Length: 159
Image (tube, rainbow, N blue to C red; front, side, top):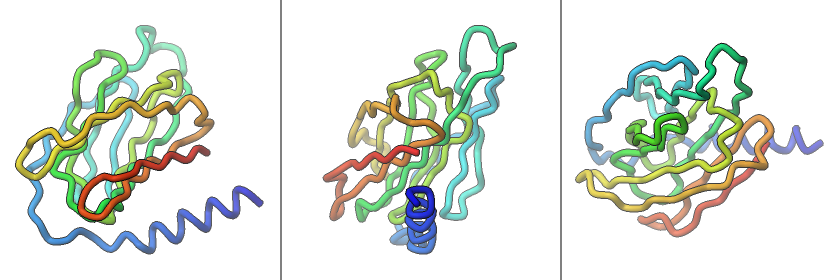
């Protein structure tokens, strides 16, 4: 029953994602591919880019992964959403995120229990940095940014 409820919520969120407010975001940079193959997809029609978390030191082993979805319901376009590469500790600029759009990071290493992220405005200025505990995720996590023209609340749900 819980799975059906979650599927319904995802279907409703997907239907609600109608695009941004029309502001032009800063151009996003594309990170290079990595051995772990984590990739990004966006619901706003922006071409998908590849993120490069390097994963563990021994890439010959199969690494358990999760999917991280970020949903922007804060009423403002995000110029750049960035994450910290769990293998190198370097910042990766994932892409812009229009209001009412989502961004999905596929194949994120499950062994990384803290998701470090940052939001930049359309002028490229740091707006907010955060660490989200994702240790309870089995297959994925959704991070929903909420507010009225600014990020006022961050809700996290696990699957």
